[in-house]
Length: 455
Image: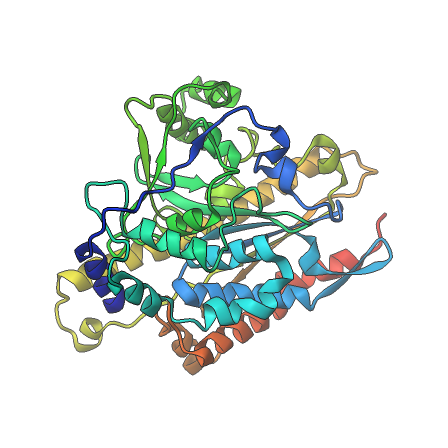
C-alpha cells in the first residue's frame, strides 16, 4: 500500500496537456452479431455441462491464484460424448474483479498463450515499479485534475499498449474462449457495473469498440491510489427501454432485488442528470463478481430464475451438470497495532474498517450466490418431467482458510495486495490454487457426475 500511495502522489504531481481519455462510443445500429453478450459470445462446447469461474480481486496475488485454476482445468480431462476433453475448454463464463480481471481478460483475448506468456509479462513483472517509472518519464502523460485525463487513464493507455495489445471487446471471447465478464463499481449508483452489452444498452453505448484495457483498469481502480474511470451516458435510444425494468418498478416491494437493480438502471435514463459515470474497483460492491454480474437481472434481461441471458429454453432443457468455482484470494492480515495493543492511527482505522467490510461482503456474497444457484437448480428441475434428467449444481469455493497447516496458511495471508510479488510467491500461489481445487469435494463430485452415463 505504501508504494501505491507514493504512485498516486507522483501521478498527481506530473503534468501533461496532450493526453485525452478514450471515451465509450454511442450505439450506431451496428451489426447485432457484434454485440458483446451471452448469446453472441458463449463458446460452442458441450450443452450438457455449464462451467462458471469467478475470479476475485487482490492484485497480483489474486491474478496468480486465479491463473492456477486455469492451469488445473487445463490438465483435467473429462469424457463427453465418448471423447476426452480438457475441462478448460468447457468453461463457459469467467466473471472477474480487480486483480482477477487481468487473468480473465488475458485468457479471453489470447487463449492458451496465457500459459507461455502471462507469467513473464504480468505475474513475474514489477508492474508497480513500471508505472512509477512511466510517471517519472520527462514529458510523460499525467493526471490532470480538472481535465479529460487522470492517472487511471494513464495506466489504461499503458496497459492497452503493452499487455492487451490494443484489443477491444470486439476481440474478446472469440474462437471458443469463455464469455468474460469484467466488473467494476459504479459510484453514481453504488452498484456493480459489468462490461457487457446489456449494461451498456442503458448508456445507449456500444461496448464492442471499447478497449479491454480500460475495463480492466476500471475493475482494479482502487479508490485513493487510482482515480475513477469515466463513461459517457448518451441521449435516448430504443435499447435503453428494457421491458423488465418497467415491470420491476411496478412492483411495490423495496426488498425485491430486481426492483433495486431496475431503479439504478432507470437513473441512467436521465443523462442530463447523470452525463458521466464514475467507475472504481469492482471490489467496492462485489469482490467476487459472481452475484452482481452472473446472477444480475441486467445480464439476464430481468429473468434470473431461467438465466435467460445465458440459456435459451432449448439449451436450458439440455444442461445436466453445472460447476461454479469461486477463487477467493482474500487474506487476513495481523496489524502492528493489534499485535501491540496500541490504538490504531487514522490510516490503520480506515484500512482495517475497509478490510472488515470487504470480508463480511465476501462471505455474504458467496453464501447468497450459492443459494441463488441452488434456487435456480430447484426451479429448473421443477419444470422438467419425471422422465427427464435433472440438473445438478456443484459450487466449489477456494480460499486460503482451507489450508490446514497454520504456518502455510499464515504465509499466504501475509501476501500483500500489490502488483508486485516475488516469483517464488507467484509460484506458491499458482501451486496452492491447484491443490485446493483438486482437493475440493464439490469439484470432485462434479467430475464424478460428469462421468455418469446419461439416463
